[in-house]
Length: 419
Image (cartoon, rainbow, N blue to C red; front, side, top):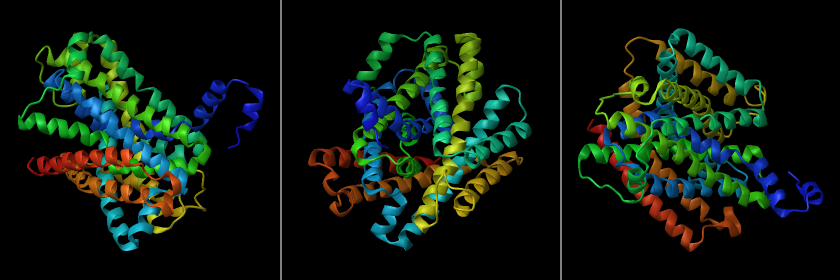
C-alpha cells in the first residue's frame, strides 16, 4: 500500500506513522490474543485459583519469548512473501514437511475440539443448550470466512481481540492486593512442587503454540504488508505479545484475589464464574463468562483457518480468505470440514475430551521445538532473508528462547504422559 498521499497531506511524521501503523496492525495482535483461548483461560484461571499471586512473575519472561517469536514470524513473512509452511517445504523437502503437517493437523484438531467445548461450557453458563449454541457458532465462523474477504475478517477478529478487555475490568472488580501483585510480578516465587512446575509449564505452553507461527506468517503475507513498513508490523507483533499477557495477568489476578483468598476449590471456568458472584459481584461473573465465550468463539474461527493455511501451503494448494471456493476449494473445504467434524464430536455424549486435550497438548509439545529450530534456520539463511537475517544479539536471544521453550515443551510432554 502506498502511503505517500498521507505524507503529503499530513506534515507531522508522528501522525503519518500512526496512520501507517493502524493500517498494518492486525496479524500480530490477533495471533497473540488467540493464545488466550478456552484452554489458555482455563489454565490461567486455575493458576490464580490454586496458587494465588505466586505465578505472576512468569508473565515477564513470557512477554519476551512471545515477542521474539512473533517478530521473527512477521519478518520472515514480509521479506520472503511466503508462508512458513512454504518456506519449510523449500528447506527440508515435501516428505518431511508432509509428516510435520500431518502431526500439526492432528494436534490442531484436538485444540479445535477444545474451542467448541469452550463454546458449549460458556453458553451453558448463560443457560443456552449446546444443541442450539454449537450449530449457531459453527454457522457464524463459517460465514465469516466464506462471505468475507481478508479486510472484513480481520476487522471482526480485531473487535474480538478488543473484547478481552472484559477480563481487565473483572480483575479490577475483584479488588486485588496491588502491592502483593506488584511484588509477585518482579520477585519469582520458585517451588519444586511437581504440581507447581506443571502449572508453570502449562502457562508457557498455552502462550506459545506451533499453529500461531504458521497463522501469523500467512496472515502477514495475505495482508500484503510491504518491506518498507516492516517496522510497523514488528510493532504490531510486539504489542500483541504484551496485550495478550496483560489480559492473562488480570485473569490470574481476579482468581487469586477472590477464589484463592477465600480457599474455594474450582475445577473449570464454569466453577470460576459461579464462585465470583458472591466474591466479586454479579458483573465480574458475567464479564468472566462473556470473556470465555468470546475467546472460545474467536479461537474456533482462527484455529481451523490456521490449519487450512498451513496444510494448503505445504502441499502447494491455493489458500487465502480473500479467495473464493472455486479459487481455493481445498482451503475452504478443509475449513468447513474441520468445523463440522468438531461440532459433531462435541455434541456426542461421553466424548473422552480430556484424553483428546492431553494428546493434542503432547503433540504440540513435541512439534514446537522442531518448528522453532526450522524458523531459526530459515531466518538466518541469506538466500531467503537477505540483509534481514538475525543479528548476533538477536540470535542469542532467539536461541535462549528456543532452549527455554524446548525444555518447557518437553516438560509439558512428560507431565502430560504421566497424567
